[in-house]
Structure formats: structure tokens, C-alpha cells
Length: 335
Image (cartoon, rainbow, N blue to C red; front, side, top):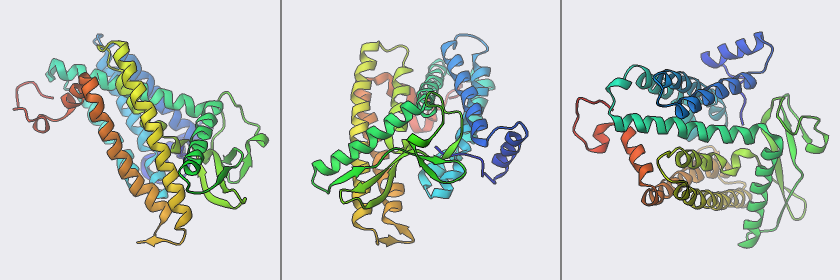
């Protein structure tokens, strides 16, 4: 997970100044903004029948948009164009959703209002579990270990080499890396900011030569999993047995596909160390472009497969799209 302490763009710089003035790190302030935003969306989802829920949701959307937007400079730094686009548009998207919730709610159709409530729940129940894992080192490290060893097992199973995983390391905020055994932080709650790598596991050849690739929480596919978790759990009108079937199909599938992705990136980066294209190394190309495009396409196919099992999911997504994209004529009830 990236920090925001070094942000130089105006919004990030202003928040960094606020963080310094109250004696906390920029990342701590970003997490606080996110926690408040997640909480407001969760409350507005749970109490959606209340008249004030739209105003609460509006505040939540703006804070969540800001929370995600503050990651954009980090993704610029590491050269990930897909995530740059996603994070940079989060703030204007959050403001637009707040405008719909507060100013345009009375003009929306009943179906669109219901889908907007579903979207509140989807975001809240996606973001909350992810940050619980991120903020509890025991869980964070468990996901990193599962991810690293799954890739190692996959590579050996398909005969692409013999690898071994190193011990868990900690990327310190002020530079340097130390073994987890030497870290004196709280394992029950992350109370001190870490470097961009957080908790990570380096990979080695069986000979002991380092592969120059490490696994962090962002490699786990957890972000993709929790999007589906949030989208399915927030379907309040769907019986739990159908929701559980959707979860049991989507989560293992994402983990398996992510394991193939990680194994492919390791093998390509290891075998073609001197390959370069328009200034991109094989790792940069495979990680930030090829694997990202393949992952997005796979998530699209998985969503389409789930639409047959959970047509309510498809209906909510379509209801939030502009009428022109739905092929519906414009009416007096805006959506």
C-alpha cells in the first residue's frame, strides 16, 4: 500500500501540510479520511430508508473519492497507467456521486435509487474488509505468504523452474528493509507507517540466487476479490444461499487466476531479464500492461458468468449507467 507523504500535487501537498501540523503521517491522515468515508457509506447503506441517508452518503462519496485519489501520484511514480487512470478519476467521480445523492436524488427513478443504495453497500463492504486485512499485520502477512507460496507451487507444478521463498521482510518508511523477526511493531494493529513494500517476501532460485521479485499484499488479488465480495454481499434482496454460491465461485476463481498471473510475471521477468521495449523492462511490461489487461478481461468474463446466477447484480450495474448506454429513451425521471 502506498503512502501519500511525498505527494507534490496541490491536494496531496495540502493534506501533507495538515498531517504535519497535527503530528501524524500523511498515510495516517489518508487512512483516517478513508475510514470516515467507509463508515458514512456503510451507515447510509444500512439506514437507506432514512431521509438523511443521501446526505450522509454524499459526504462518504467525496471522502472515498479523495482517499483513492491520493494514491494516484504513487501509481504515476511506479508507471502503472491503468491504476493512474482509476485513482485520478476517483475524486471527480466521488463528487459526481455526491451531487446525485444530495441534489438530484428526488429526480431519480425508484430503480436507480435502489441501485445507488446497492452501490453504497458495494463500496463499503469492499473497502472495509480490505483495510481490515491491511491494518492487521497478522492478516496482511498471511495473505502475502499465501500469494507467494501459491506462485512458487504453480511454477514448480508446471515445470518452469525451482524456486524458494525467503523470510518475511518489512519495508521501513524511512528506507531500508529488516526481517519481520527484528521488527518491533504491533502485530495486532498497524500503528506505524511502512514503506511502499509494506510486508513482503522475496523470491530466490533454488541455488540461492535472488530473483529480484518480491510479493506484497497488492500481489494477492485481494483487491479484485473484495470488489466481488462487496458487490454480492450488498444484494440485500437476494437470499444468502444464492449470494454464498456467488462468493464460492468468484473468490477461488480469482485466486487461481491471480496465481497464474503472478507465476507468469515471475517466469517472464526471470527468463527475459535483458528484454526491453520502449524503455520498459519485461517486468514492467508484464506487470503493468499485459497482466493488467488480462486481469481486467478475466474479471469482466467472471462478472458476465455471475450475471446468470445473480441477475440482480446485472440489473443494478445497468441501472447506474446512462440511459443512452442502456438503450433506453430519455424520460422525465433522470438517472
